Length: 339
Image 1: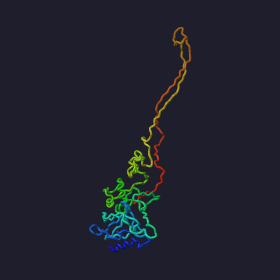
Image 2 (image 1 turned 60 degrees about the vertical axis):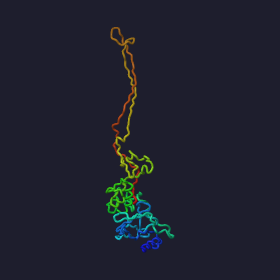
Image 3 (image 1 turned 180 degrees about the horizontal axis):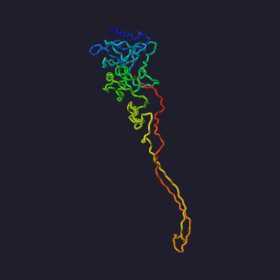
Image 4 (image 1 turned 90 degrees about the vertical axis):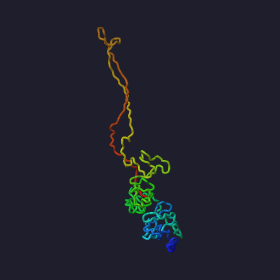
């Protein structure tokens, strides 16, 4: 034990590598035991950012912090962990047995070591700039270390058979997605404990952003703005990960219900005129036949106006029922989620 202590102290004080900004904690090069004092054969040590639930942080094989250790690190058959180095600051660790049952969970452990001499402060772990669940847009295709694509495929443990990434380093994102979005499909079904589900080699689907744009939740901690609501969005825009269930295609076909009501009123005015002739007796009496009667021809005219109204119905608009484009100016890229 004293030998191990002095070795750890030497690493902490930078005796072995005084110019490097690397430290360690007491788990390095130490043997782990269960509650009965038996060695924890094949135990696993996970490294997380201090103060987080399960946001991974790298451990390294070298003092230059360039060669990452697996996360988790696996104990040998005697329960002994290999040597590892950490960036300056604090860290959280979780030790489990081979079956994934927690043995130790410790947060805000001080990394003993660097930040001494004239070389300035410790280095920054590049994988901790973003947190688990953060999104990243990349002008490119393919995979990206430390991330998975938001493509609806699944993540899980190394033996889970996940389609996007099957690896131990997906645990933090698996737990994050499981805890934050109950609508993401998990296979087999959820047990209610996200960490246990991961240990049981289940898989969970990533958010599917293929061909979709991202919009803010309609409330985001405030009252709903109503900018995305039915019937326009077609679903509750206050639910994380909700996709619109209405016009979610890139084109729209107008149906009769989408065409505005048209009422046409027709009004017609005009005049009529004409001439005629009438036959009257002398003195203006109507013409009568008989002896002693006379006939006078006199012209007469008749005029008048008329007005009318009605409705008009169009039975043939000349259209072709072509679909209407429904996409704003868009450029497509790849969207990733931080492990």
